[in-house]
Image (tube, rainbow, N blue to C red; front, top):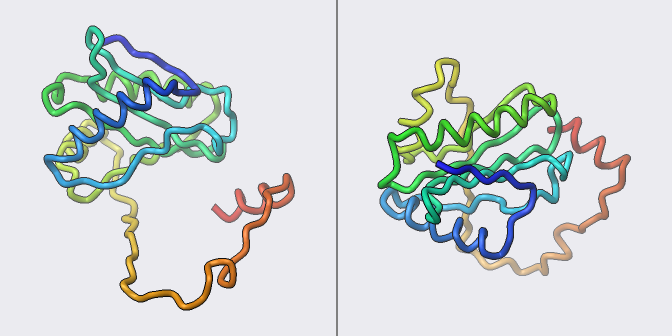
Length: 168
C-alpha cells in the first residue's frame, strides 16, 4: 500500500475520501464526517491526513485531530474489501511516528458504538480501553428565539485559546 501523508488535502483527495467514507459507513449505517481540515490543530505543519492507495484506488484513510500537543484523536476507515489486510495498522504506524515525534503522549480512537469493523481493528491494541461515548442530541421543537439571542461568537485570542485548552 502506498501511503500519502499531508497536512492539507486537495479537492480531489477530499472527493476520494468522501466516496470511500460513504462506502465504508453504509453497511453499518454509520454517520458523521471526519474533519478534513487542519485549521484547529496545534501545529498546522504536521501531517494529519494519511491516505492509503492500492494502485490509484484510495482503500484506507486516517486523520488525526490534534488541538493540543499532548493528545490526538484518530478517525479512520478502510474499504470493506480491503479490511483484515493491515491497511489501518500501516496508516496508524505512519501517524504514530509523526505524533510521537511531535510530543503527543495520548491517542484517542473515535469509534461509533455500532462500528463492528472499528472494534475489530482496535482489538490489535492491548492497552486500548473504552473511555466514553458521545451522543448527538436532537430536538423536534421549534426555537422561538433567534440563535443570536441564545449565544454569541467571540474571536479566539491567544489568551482565550490558552484558557480553552486548559478546560479540555
